[in-house]
Image (cartoon, rainbow, N blue to C red):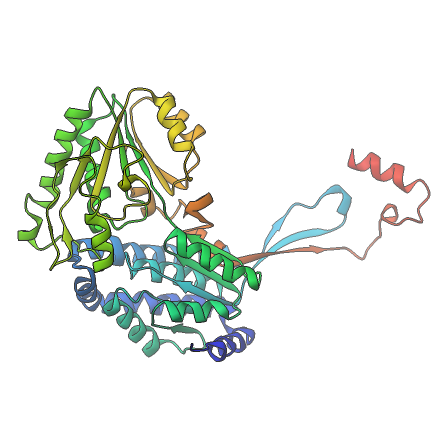
Length: 456
């Protein structure tokens, strides 16, 4: 197994020179990264087409555009984020001034996934650079063209002691995790997230884990069914459902279920055509292993729509499975593909209880005009983040930190959250030498009474 200690030591020495902490250095690096993306836009689109059959529209919307917006937002606000800020001092520290100094961790390891192989590599990378860290980026081996292009663009424009891309499979990830770094940022499955956390625990390395889970989508009887259907179809089947925050399953009120499913069918045909195999624009499943796992679900319940697939192209058409129950195979783990199970309900408290009894999801979506129901869902169900009357779109706002809770993840990023997650806040109290407070010392007569009077 290859060792990466020399690379990490090289980055640590560079970090200790202090250059990465300079605001001008960080801004220059982010501007260079921004320029690289813009000038290599077509190459990125070509690589993502080869790896996942992503259309240029989807690639720009979900990979390139969102990253450019993130970097633009960071460049605008970094000066304010990075400067020390003064906070209040307590009465017990009379005469002092209190400050918080944001400082980088040092050498950060970013392990990114295959489903959005550009966005989910570069967005955390930009956050780490903004915070002043050196970065080792490990992209996914399942999207080799995108990973190779990332390696080429980074290695040709940044010294490896500052940013290094390390390609390879599980063995490379394991070797990197065996080394001591200062921060680990991982995006991927729950099972691998547990491995990452175990490795981090050996060195007490802080981590961010962006994981997943079964994200519910609830369609109440008063929902705008036509609009709900369109937004759910888009959120679920973009990237062929290979999105960590895609609606994993639907709860639809029994009174509107038939009408809603009809609208959902129309929306899918409108957005993705009635024959995705002819259009050639539908994202493919990343690997044969994932493809076979997904098609094993197709005999669950009853197929309301779809169900066709092409193994030679690793493509599965948008599929709706009706008459699904919690004991079905498709409901045991996150689906991560273009298959949408549907269950109906009459009692809202019952489905709230069913969701509460399972792992906390990364996302939740509720379609209803009733504000009492909206508040009830938000108050009673713990989840990472989500939308009311929409799906997935909360990821697009730099003002909304994105992350999970419980089994769906630890930590959050996007916007200032990306800076914060790679930053340690160092607390400093600057004390006056003009006078000294005698009650802090045990030699003061009646000092304890005085302290109690102040503190109470």
